[in-house]
Length: 53
Image (spheres, rainbow, N blue to C red):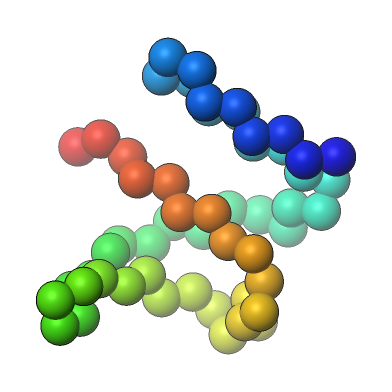
């Protein structure tokens, strides 16, 4: 079951196969940016959630 809802400032993420969440800082690289994650997640689907300051 996968549920992703965005509604007026409320967010719901549900998936029976989610292993956890990772918080990382976005770092500059050239004219773009990147977020480093552990190597064990190579080839996996990832969601990046941008938070307000």
